[in-house]
Amino acid sequence: RPGTMLIRQGIVVDHLQAQKADILIVDGKIADIAPEIHIIPRQCEIIEAAGLYVMPGGIDVHTHFNIDVGIARSCDDFFSGTRAAACGGTTTVVDHMGFGPKGCSLHHQLNVYQQYAKETAVIDYSFHGVIQHVNDDILAEMALMVEEEGISSFKLYLTYGYKLDDEDVLKALIQLKQVGALATVHPENDAAIALRRTQLLEQGKTAPKYHAVSRPLECEAEAIARMINLAKLAGDAPLYIVHLSNGLGLDYTRLARDNHQPVWVETCPQYLMLDDSCYEREDALKFILSPPLRPAVEREKLWLGLVDGSIDTVATDHCSFTYHEQKQRGKDNFSACPNGMPGVETRMPLLFSEGVMKGRLSPSRFVELTSYLPAKLFGLYPQKGALQAGSDADLVLFDPEQEVSIKHELLHDNADYTPFEDIQTQGWPVLTISRGDVVACNGEFTGKAGNGRFIRRKPFDASVL
Ligand code: DUC
Ligand code: ZN
Ligand code: ZN
Ligand code: ZN
Image (cartoon, rainbow, N blue to C red):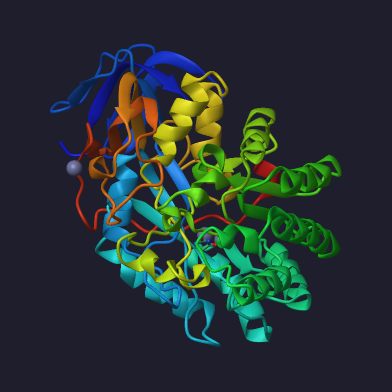
């Protein structure tokens, strides 16, 4: 009977506690969780989970599948991207749509992305809307996106081709708050970056390592502080900072929260695991992304933020380009390199290994960062991110004994490298279940293209956080 199984005697972890229990899944939904379950349906698959952690499937709220960044199209689409996600213990993605044609409507990009994902995604998905420009039509459309389409978060860029100026940011923030949507922002000071980039290129400093020199952490921290103040001026509009990479930016968000402002913060494994010494490597192009990798001291400040609660989510910003071809466009000019790196499959194992197994995060805090808070912030809870009767049976089983040295050849994306090659991990996702179906088992993909469903999300509601 599809979507029906009993998972016996695992260490069941939610955002509050970890305890030994059985989980009964019927028709793709969690039916019961109890210390022991003896009454089970006929034709029920039994999974023995003694010694394994059984947790809500990961929710990665920051991917870019099939994205056209102008100079290249990413090498993962919604099939290979969600396949890799599934093999890494993630059961839902919320993808950041790329920009569409100049002047296009919000629905235009949504339709494009619905087509991309429809028959290809292997796990459930949603999208963040993208605000390319602001006018009365776009502001009115935001309400329809939330009410009719179930899109309750939007991305604003302060750099790149469709950066918004302060007036447009303010108008967008006011309306997003009004219609029940969360504003997510890519915060970097575009003018500061452009000036430095021009100067570096003029001085012949074109090597890949100058990418990081062209956008130091103050560019990011300044834009974070600006966004916090604009959100305050917009009447305390809720604000979500994506891909935080540094401690100064984190301090600004702490100040805002001490001041009771609704601000939430995401970071990514690359900023927790890697640092700017990667730009000294011969294969530095692999590490060109924005914001760039930072000095090693910043890494430790981010870990503190995970521990003290000032960072809320860990997502990936998975945006993959092949090293041997696409990334090579930057070899003589860093500014010609498509920005981004793969990571959707390694997020859960890296955070589990470095966080839980090294004793920095409790298993419940791991669930909070990778699933519970992403679900709450983005209107997916309790369908996702919860272990409760009635929730979707999206689960990941981790074996804390399994040691894996990360190799790209073990992974399931379409890139030709992982930035985490040869990193040793302890604890690995050995089974991933999406609405009661096993989609990955012991490093093998067992799911099916088209089985992922579009999830209509609820409006943003700060009172549940
Ligand atoms: N940064 C990247 O490196 N890639 C995709 C988009 C982004 O903000
Ligand atoms: Zn970004
Ligand atoms: Zn991104
Ligand atoms: Zn495989």
